Length: 164
Image (tube, rainbow, N blue to C red):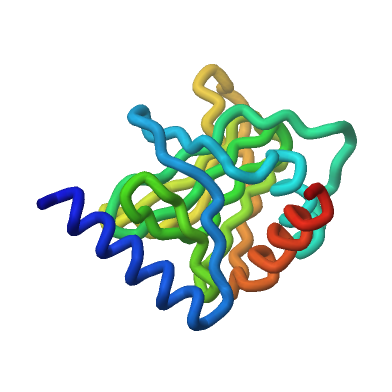
C-alpha cells in the first residue's frame, strides 16, 4: 500500500510539473541522506554559475551533495569555495527541483567549512563558518537568496542537452 501511495504521489507531481513544463528530477536520495545526482556535478556547477556568478580561483571540488531534513527540503551542495541549497521536493527517493523555489548560496569570507543554519521547520536562516578549531576574530559567511529557480532548472536542462 505504501508503495502504491508513493507511486501515485510521484505520478501526480510529475504530471502536475509536466503540465507547467518546468520540472527536473536531479537525483536519488540514498539511505544515508546523500544524493546521487542524475546530472554531473560539473554540469550542475555550470548551470548554477550561469545564473549566480561564482568566483572560481581553481576548479571547485565537490565534497558532498545531500538532502536537508525537515518539512522544507533543500538539495545542499558542499563545494570547497561555497555552499548552495536549492529548494526541492523528495518524492519517493527522487529529488525534484521546484521552479518557484528559493536558492541559498553561502560564500565564506576568510573561513573554512561554511554551513547553513536551519530552523526547526527546515527553513534556512543563514550560514555560518564551522571552523571548530579557530579561536580568532569572528568570521562571516556571506549569505544570498534568490528566487525563482526556474532559470537554474532551464540551465540544468540546457547542460543536459548539450552533453547528450
